[in-house]
Image 1 (cartoon, helix red, strand yellow):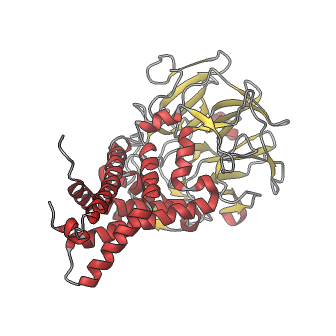
Image 2 (cartoon, one colour):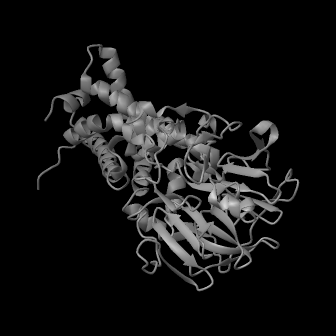
Image 3 (tube, helix red, strand yellow):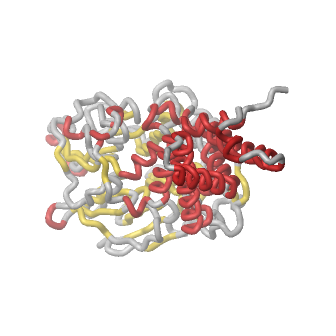
Length: 504
């Protein structure tokens, strides 16, 4: 049986992966502390050209709000003229009209950080007030003709996901709670939704592995431990490159060798754990993890008294069924806001694991549900759903994270329905050139680096991390095997340095 040359495997894999591993480590630390960097932007001109907004792609167009809708319902003359619209998405808010004749900046008052301008929804309340929500804040338009942030009783690092209204009730949704307010909308009451029927407290294996990889499974302490492991991997990369370059300074060479050996030896379990869990967070392993649930681990952040912890995504009021329609990572539910009771809806169309991006009614009163798994028409009253483009019945499961059409946004306020795909966008009108290089948040840049998409594009979602994860594990394991062989050789009085650098 042919013996593997562990030294060559470790050497060339380590050298070949050192740059990417450094990028993974630095970006991972940034991803772990989003709140510290949410004010930092990166100009898209410094990124590959595919990151420029073109044809309203990348979530630049998520939805629109018809500012004159109430007027149109009472005025036949207004129907023939152009009405004002607010177009919103990942680049902020823009004032336009139903003819798409202009797009004027409507972001005055919003923080300059790109994270703050990832607008999830814009609505008009019953009293005529305008509201917008991003993951990091809720804003009301009015005073001095600009947006003003409204303070809410949020928990630490709690992200907002949506806003909706019905009558005089205003509802803001976070990833874990619903917040309800009544006129004059100055205070919000936090509501914890009740557990659904047959709730067993289990979570997806994907979420468990994800939080283990970031360290968030054990709170801030876990994050700091993972940050330390990232620093360890950085040191292993740097010292490995120094050893490969063989500098003439003997002290530098010796110190680098000792650090590389000792750090690698004592942290092998932790570094392998990080590499393995990261490998599992991309297809094809990711799909299996998403489809399977396991009990929440005691003593971790997953073990929460709130059955909806980090699961809420979008909310709308359904006039036809007289209830609140709630989209979650567990599926769609009917919500009774008065008692916080929820009921699972079994006829709902599939939604990508990435979450729903479009949830609005068509002219026939049916729900349009769009995500990276496609766009579906859902008739709740008839308990049926079908594909918007093909008319075929909707599948029971979402399947892969990305379908044939990755729907990022939709508007029915222009002369014809506008559907924006994440990568292709839409050509309903010419996108202003001034929007091409709107800034990207440092956190999003780090995410692109960490996922590998910044290096080879969207195909990285399926290939890059899968391959790099295997190579990283093999590199770490080969280093461990070298250490085992060195220990055996040392017993036969062979010099450690001579074995590593001279022996074949």
